Image (cartoon, rainbow, N blue to C red; front, side, top):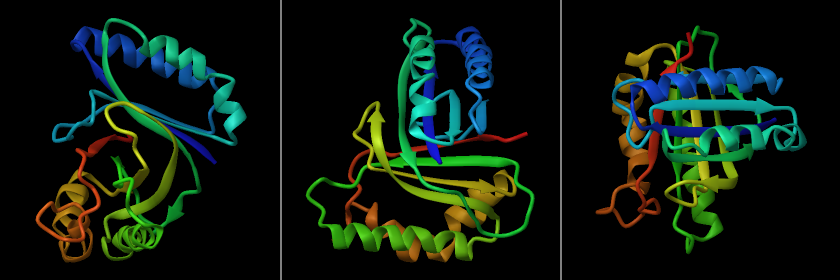
Length: 204
């Protein structure tokens, strides 16, 4: 599948509501295999006011409608936009219901060797195995990035609920024992030095 993430900052509440309406209309018209356009929930970091996640069967399907979304996002009521496009398939972690979608945009330092990047990716893949509030997940390398940083990876999950994200996920020992070292500037293993985009929204 070919996926698109956009994290959109709106100038004000009125602009946000108008953008939500127009982006939802465009998402429906795009015939995307999956479309989620929702206001973000409190607690996001660099995550925008609106989270848009579209999934197409291939890149050509996105290319045929991309200009429609670009024109909506190229308006005065739109502030910053972060995001990326990427390929990959969703992995089912366990059979539970989910109500929260979360995405993480990050940038690995460009001088990082491929073996180190592979170890970092393997550590991220450990999280869904141990965090029982995750229903599905996907880790992908970015094909094209937009926004504040040339993002290299998108890591996304569906969570049982908001507590499952802010509690068991962020506080789990697998997180601080294996994953945090890649992000910690005081750790010699650090390879993520830029600010990340941590965004989430309701799926309901």
